[in-house]
Image (tube, rainbow, N blue to C red):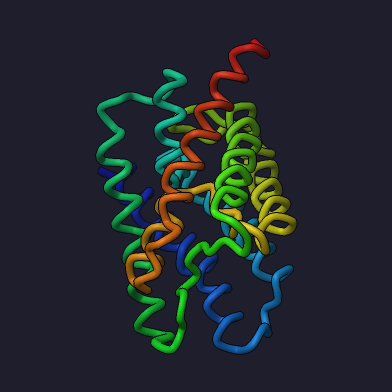
Length: 211
């Protein structure tokens, strides 16, 4: 059960800090800034990988779990418990932020600034890059190597920095789903539920060409 507890608390902390930075930026008229939000996402992911990577692999992302499973280095019997733990952690984080900041409109939900197709394609490409990095520095349920957290956290920060203003740079279905559910902004959430798994599965396929 400690793996599931790890995925629950890790996803909760990720949502509380990452979307929390977005909520605070929204409710304080930009005091955190876009750069600050991007840095927050990168740093919290990096910190959680070093804190919980040895316990659960620090997925905190259903698309990552599914991609590892398809890549055959994560047991299929663990998929449903992992995804359940991630969802419960994420929804808990979003509900707490709703309680703390009831005036927030979006609660950190991913919202396209342009067309839905533009954001959909961006999410696929961003998720492809993220998973390709993950595949090279981590394996299944164990964080691998001293620099895994730095590499993964850095690519999250990079992608949030340049693509966040356009598509939200979610790369994570549950990260976008739960604030959308709690805030009631569901019209665009399919982009972030479908796009990241496609991108990450393409990364798994491409990675096989490199082996």
